[in-house]
Image (tube, one colour):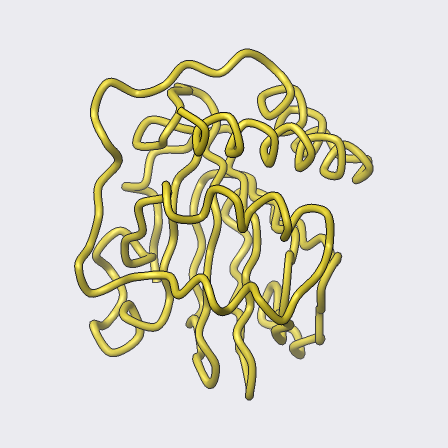
Length: 193
């Protein structure tokens, strides 16, 4: 129960930080993160080939990272990409859904989770019907949207993707840990490489 209380503290603090980004998706995410949360009956799906090493957080200090350290062992990780990424890439990009249809907490209209992209990994061009907002908790990545030149984004950066907007992320010699949120059509079947 203590880990769950710690997770709620992390989500509430995250909601306050996300609210600072002045977009509709940020407002919606913040409302969900700060609102009442209902725990799922079933544990979220887990992939044995995808795990999170808590030591990755040890070099980073922020209020959000410190709160995350207190509940990281509670989270279930799986490969990103809804089974559509090549295996060599999917093992390098792990996600956990904190809130949503497959999340630790239930929600039918929003997905909010964490993404860990390991060093020297290219998450290829992809798109989905959901509008998406990222917030980088630690590390950095080159981000490209609509086939434009990649731009370096680091800790505390927000990255916003409109519905069906093509994007990719590239890490170099460090990992990237980011919060992601989906709103609108959150059905994973619309995800495409």
